[in-house]
Length: 172
Image 1 (cartoon, rainbow, N blue to C red):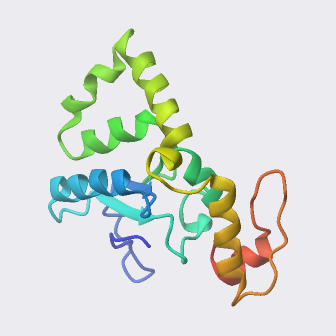
Image 2: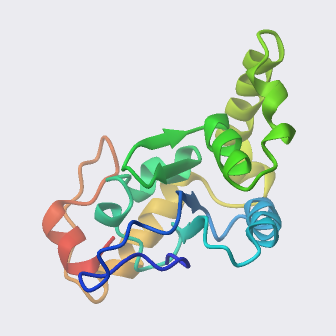
């Protein structure tokens, strides 16, 4: 679910948000960060917050980023459709909110690669660190839950992605 308004066909204006942040609403630490960012946004609508854990999450509305991919690393979609990921998401979101100085040091030659490496560790271990099941289990549970009302999913066993017909029916 996205919480910033996107323009409709009746509003030819440019998109109000600058970056759509895709976050895992079932991750307690992720939610702390999102709550902090919402406070910084202060109702300005600069950031569209999209919970990838919501049953109505739709890759087509989010840069084509499927649930499994979004669960692996943080992603965001800029208003022009550019997809960004990893620490660059934080750099750009914080910059849009006017607090880019917080992540500015992550661009430094020595600190940047270290921060990227630490984020990679976090991304790989965040489910276990936060006491959640493995990604494989989360994907299976999600597919089973969503398939209840949508028929049987046909999945690609190598990527864990749901076929397009199911995605269109269930808006996965």
